[in-house]
Length: 219
Image (cartoon, rainbow, N blue to C red):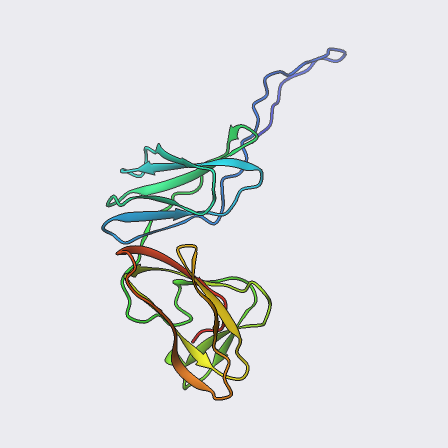
């Protein structure tokens, strides 16, 4: 219970030494994705004052062995191993934090089309929901105009299309693939409203997990 208790005698003085330091909390926001054949990504949020992160792997779900270290918070990329699970810790003030909860990789399947409400799409704050029967699956997502609104998808495949709507109310967006800007200030503003338009298309990507990120409303 993080307490020390013992009997005392009136008038006596006591000194407690070598009290162990409580480790910092484990990194939060842990998640992992795999293509189920070549690689696994382990992601997590930045931990306050952390100078290093450590990745642990287990083949049996009980014994975890450190397999990698990193000074960044983007992600660990490791070779896919069937049935493997992971934990992450941080080095804070020279001491290792608690290890995270068990991270079980989610297999990312190749999908022909992803709706805006699909769990694979991760939104920042500043997005709203809208219903429109003319849209794919009858829904759309829109940004409220705040700078920095992002939508992120981790997918498996060798290409990606961004499908959305052109209208007088729309602006533009930047598209990133694995952190690299591949399409800048794509303009989907138009005097004519047209739904289900291919706004961007990128092909020839590596076969494996891919991370894309954009700023704009999408169908």
